[in-house]
Length: 84
Image (cartoon, rainbow, N blue to C red; front, side, top):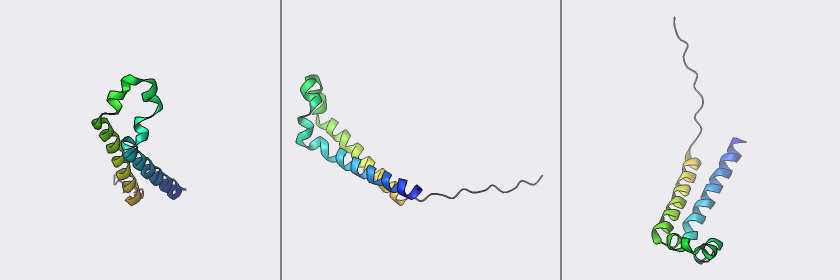
């Protein structure tokens, strides 16, 4: 079960990272519900720095996915008995 959960987590992180990496630079980002109903958010959401921050979070998600993919669980160690 642990291997399946780890695989699903890796897949989720890769997909989320790819979405966050691509989405801010697409046309969908400029024509969404929130910008149509809250025009005061337009200056913040369409700024290149905001788009870069969202894309950076996507890159971090992909790196975390690589980290989960390469890491192996460490077996629990039993402490040595103490000598009184």
